[in-house]
Image (cartoon, rainbow, N blue to C red; front, side):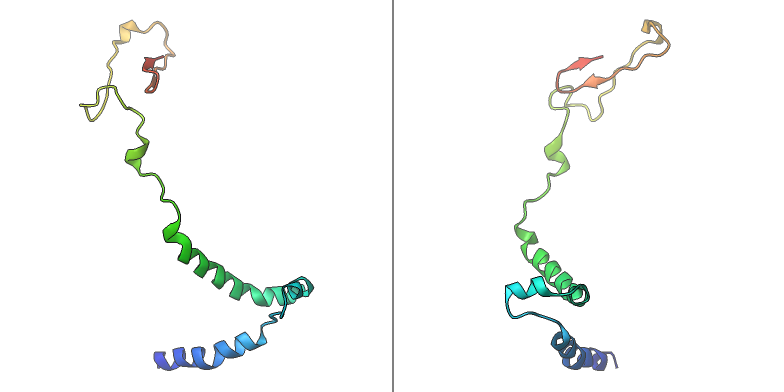
Length: 108
């Protein structure tokens, strides 16, 4: 039953759909299409755009992996986690925030 349905779609419904599409014979004919004709072309154009994207996707540049974007390049690389401890008595103010800049090697 499933194969019969697929066969009917491919052999009967798809050719009938393609015959009803308002495809102009020239490129200038696209400029004369009405809004309703463009809406009828939209599913076909969407499928063609998807197929085009899937075709060129293997040739697009890959995204950087996490290892390529390391921030800490030099400070305590032998440790899996860099932690600095500060005594609470050394703090001058109650509202103090410390931030390490990995690139300039400063702690502010």
